[in-house]
Image (cartoon, rainbow, N blue to C red; front, side):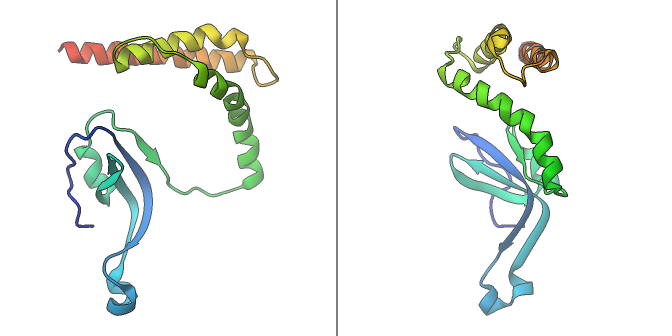
Length: 163
């Protein structure tokens, strides 16, 4: 699908979007809708340095991405708006407290791994300072587990780099 390269070079920034895509090749008014339409139900759009570097079936392109490339999932789900809102409200409330904290945060380290490790420690150390109805013992435990998982990820990456 698409006429773009299937394997992007290593750009300064690389990420991908995954989900259904409807696009066109040619002009549907000249060539006809059926001849022009491209519908990829599980597509990957690879963005390199702000430009589309590759487009095609996710199954084909995912293996070509460097390990750790962020992939945002945009696959549709059945919407039940009231249920969705009640399930997403806690996350919104947590973000209301975390975002100002993150904006002011100063990470330590000279590498991505050190900065990520620093974030995990600072997050865990700051949990007691967050207040409000959303900051229950369960919420704090979730973030303690997440911080521990972040440190485990750094350790695993360092171990793989040493091999």
